[in-house]
Image 1 (tube, protein in one colour):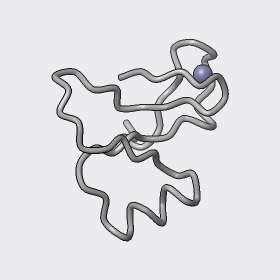
Image 2 (cartoon, rainbow, N blue to C red):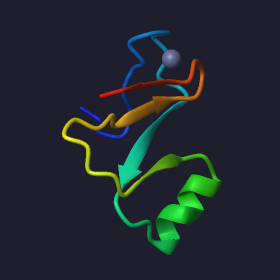
Image 3 (tube, rainbow, N blue to C red):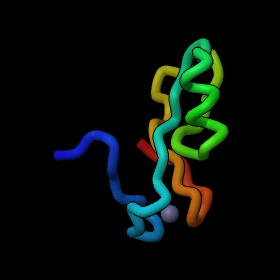
Image 4 (cartoon, rainbow, N blue to C red):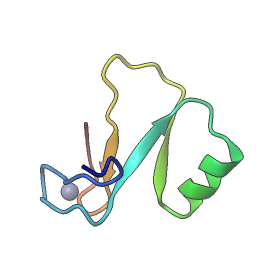
Length: 62
Ligand SMILES: [Zn+2]
């Protein structure tokens, strides 16, 4: 199973689903975020953070 690809449960599309990365962003992560390959979720320590963001329908899920 490819860990970098997943399907949006809402619109069933996997094309524009990107990962939400938590914690302090490195320069490399900022670059990836600029290319819309990932989303920076910030440093908040939620107990059950969403890991994926669908750019097609703006749905966050995990
Ligand atoms: Zn979606």
